[in-house]
Length: 112
Length: 117
Image 1 (cartoon, rainbow over the protein chains, first blue to last red):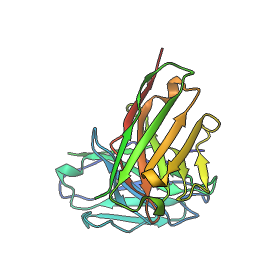
Image 2: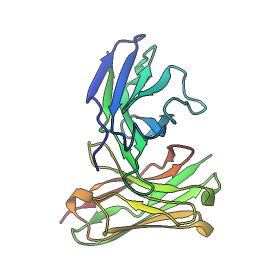
Image 3: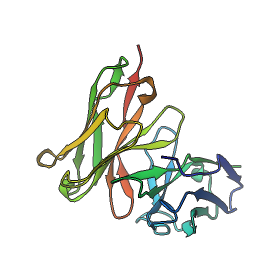
Image 4: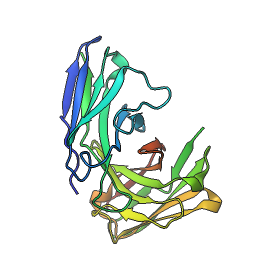
């Protein structure tokens, strides 16, 4: 099974907005609205930031938003802050097998 | 508060076996599917295996199929991963993770498995 495709790195200045893309296929991203995004700081476990394409769990800042078009999902972070610097991973349910999730390769966000 | 605490990791020689455990608390364990996800040093996340609430549905990544076995004991609020025929490429931090509505929503802190001679 192939991982979802994300850019290796993105960067932005404080206050700016950035968008991270996540490209899959019709068997995963394009076929289900079960796309999620995770933030991972060094040495820490991943934290759920977006689920079901565009929903935020309780406690997650509304500066984080998600969307999807066809086989590509996107995470947008507005009003960048220093603490947003982290690795971000997308994930999607996939029809390729039972109970299977697939992850993107991860994107390193640098806040300049 | 949801808590997932992994244990059982360590240094093991290639070809040997290891059993990981995950103790869950803070939620009704037998209401949710559970998963193992791993992260090799400096690399991204890789889904390893998942099991439904009643063990009726089980899935494995191709990379571990036939070597790893996932199981759960709902009476003990525990998730397990039996890992046989371990290879160097299985070296990773193994996370226990809970599936919520439409996503894996909680993760443990992980247990490190190192496969080396």
